[in-house]
Length: 447
Image (tube, rainbow, N blue to C red):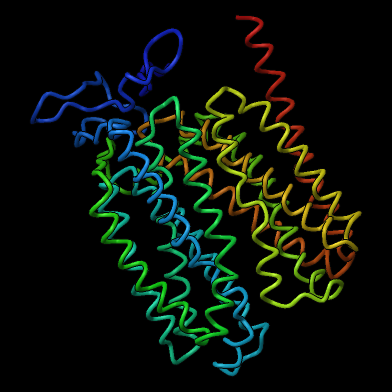
């Protein structure tokens, strides 16, 4: 039996206390530090870790500014992996290739992002976070310049992979924001940062379309490169330092991901359900453009504007989570997502009903993600970047699978097949939620 104590966020019978330290610290050679008798299961035995920056100790006014900066940084960083989606036609013309071949840009950029989730995001538990984020943004800027100036399609594809890989800095900053947030307001801060990330996703296609119309498709890459350099400097000037507890080797850091999955059932449950939700989300947004063009005759900019629905979903979810309503809120979000896709199926002939379905679906998916991250970030204070790696990696896999299946279903069964399949995914998630809720209530009744 493993008697190794785990890092706790508080030590009272009533649960975590805002005043309690959030991270176990390993004694080091200098200074008086808070002590942990033995390393946590995810630390390397016998290693001495640098003391992390104290969490939640920023003055309230500065903390608000930092969280707003994190939200902005997440949005403009994650936007890099979506800029190319509405630009495939002019990119194909520039390089003299088919539009089908140009779709590789989107695929490889997303694969690069997946690679970054696995290889770079865990470094948030090993390296000083501010420097990691700032330096990664400089690599992103270089990749964007290479993409914007590429004379050959192969070079452009390689640069796109690097853009995707380094844009995972957005997820590093999400975990950073959680470390800074007071325990009692963690959900609100996660919601704020996730709102910025969501706005970046939603605005990226519209912004790149407008910039391409004014100055050509290459301009958005060069503009974003300048923005990444400026953001790198701004993060260094504004963010506090945060040095993680973990001091083991990088290979051991990656191996600990499997241990996290085995030891944390809440992480498994949340990752599976959010993957199902994001799969439903991807089904809708992958195929709705075909409906908007063929059935409703919208242009590219109008489609980009349509994609802005639901951008205010995250902050209310964060506040509800802080008030203890995350479990019931998660169940309602799953029901709402299924209902939204049924509405999209029945209301395909009405632009208003399609927009309403998009609003409800975005609200449900983003709210469920905030509820989920509020819970999983409380599991291991010393491993939040790796927790986010498991969670977001699962979410990304669910989204990619949903997009792929949606394309096949749309060719064979049209919009009806896509939306009914999409609606089935959160129903499966609701079954998982129901089983988990029943078990928890039985455990509570028995205790």
